[in-house]
Length: 125
Image 1 (cartoon, one colour):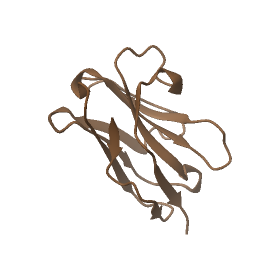
Image 2: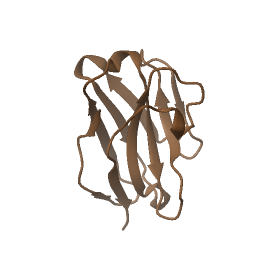
Image 3: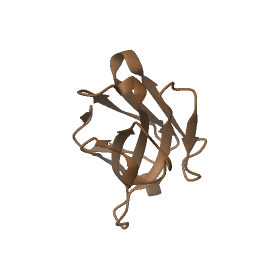
Image 4: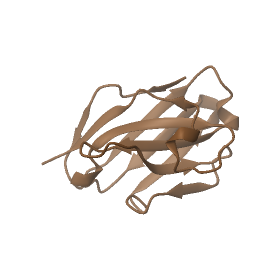
């Protein structure tokens, strides 16, 4: 399973920064691709914002966050991170970490086997 380290909601001002993390247990985290998804209040689907391969070297980002968000992982600690900078109002949403061993389409939520519970991130002045 994946457990977010911030299970409560977080409020951040526009332009601010925030780091999310989630810790894995019960599966071979180091062999899994990880990702962060988010669901905005007005959308009924999860948007993939970042993905990181098992080794930590190959990373992909959505156009909406590229250059502002950084995904990383610490395999010995079974932990995934999402560093978010220059946050915008439209970054508001529930953020989920996810993991999968055999990934074909990193943007497809249906491919991920393990999911965290989600953390509400609200960007507001």
